[in-house]
Amino acid sequence: MTRVARALPAAMAAEKQQLAGFVRELVDACLKQQRPDGLFHDVLDDPRTFVETNTAQMLAYSIFRGVSAGWLPKTYLAHAERMRAAAHAKVDAFGLVQGVCGAPNFDRSGTATEGQSFFLLMEAARRDLRA
Image 1 (cartoon, rainbow, N blue to C red):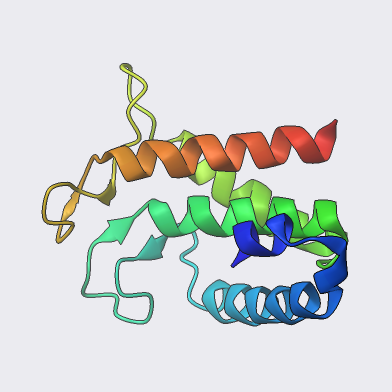
Image 2 (cartoon, one colour):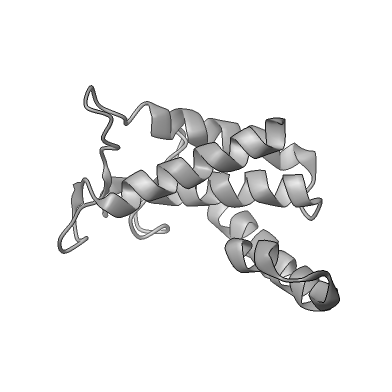
């Protein structure tokens, strides 16, 4: 939803605002399930599931983009920075983000190209915000 909202033309301002509202609602709901280390469980409200890194990366990305676009207040940045720090702590010596939903079945902690992509999206969004 964040990527779509960013891509919509100015003529679709109402739709962009609607999507922004959905994203904010989703971010707020997810933040209630955040662990003290900044990460989340695979099933957000089920602590019996494994801890994974992708949710933090995706939410940080959405927050950075939302603040940059003006549809999220800057107060959300502290959450994004905490999630970003947690994701950075999961990068191994080879540059792989560990602890994401692991390929090929995505049913346990591991590595996956999606985890790498979410990390890059998060970093690009933060860079753009700070520019």
